Length: 163
Ligand SMILES: CC(C)(COP(=O)(O)OP(=O)(O)OC[C@H]1O[C@@H](n2cnc3c(N)ncnc32)[C@H](O)[C@@H]1OP(=O)(O)O)[C@@H](O)C(=O)NCCC(=O)NCCS
Image: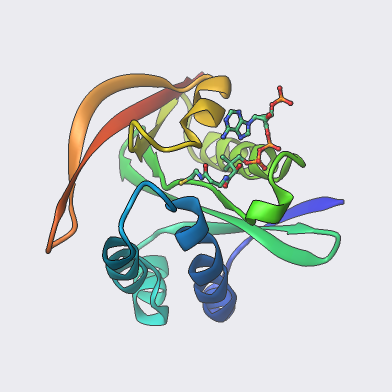
């Protein structure tokens, strides 16, 4: 059974462990090892996670048969605008509905905050997960770039309107 819970400050250890397991496998073939390490340090160190929660980022953890196997986060960026960071699911458990459960949790959460609203996602055109988001109704709205300090990645913004 899949359950999704909203993370609290007490979950920072779990979030850090999940990210260190899931982010490298998700970006295999998309980013270099150095880029992945930089990203883990910048976004998923315990300090970065704790700061992000303090600054209003909400993380959701998906549990499948008692094991924490997926994560997603979302932050409000404007009166009616939310930025969802990519969904990460343990590579041994893809295709079991965990990604859908996390996506649904984010939609329900933002709906409960404000409607109508827009969820945006920044994703690389070569990301193998892109088809998942398209299947969920997200559509490309513009190009963008991610400044990661030491390097710059060309990305695309996908969007979903909720009414
Ligand atoms: C992409 C990802 C988040 C989707 O989560 P998931 O738990 O596997 O997705 P679900 O089981 O809920 O699948 C929902 C639907 O999307 C489809 N789907 C999932 N991943 C897909 C993919 N990469 N390409 C095409 N379709 C995909 C499923 O086949 C399913 O289709 P159906 O409703 O017709 O049966 C997950 O596969 C993942 O983390 N993959 C790791 C690598 C990756 O691509 N990461 C992207 C984020 S950086």
